[in-house]
Image 1: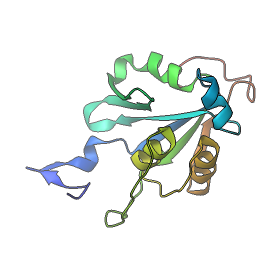
Image 2: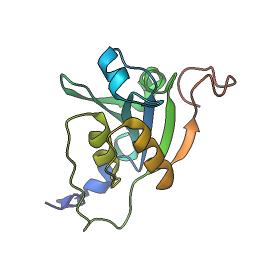
Image 3: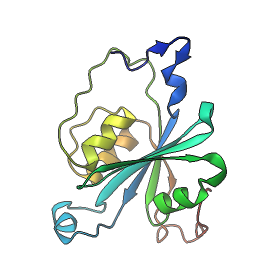
Length: 158
């Protein structure tokens, strides 16, 4: 099925975020992941605002299961703070005009899962490589890690 189909006049493209915020985390609780994910970042997740529903959708892939959270705009600040504090956040616009492209994703970890959700074609295996691919595909850093920008200490939305 086409990812941009409609059902009885409801356009699915209006039911997903127009921009994804990709959060690159420099920390992992698991020592072997910190060792295996060479480089600056150890985990990646994403979130975005769904205008039509006035909600935020959060996607976080973990080894035990993937988690999807849907939170109303009026109460999203705490979750946005959780997914952005201490992390580097990159805004990625939804790809337009690529509905006929094939974007097959392999792998059972956070990097290929997030890359597939945001619609970026990549063979990145580690968060650092996905970070570089996001920037190469028009991503914009909107929140650097705190130690890079001490002026950004407030939790939540900027």
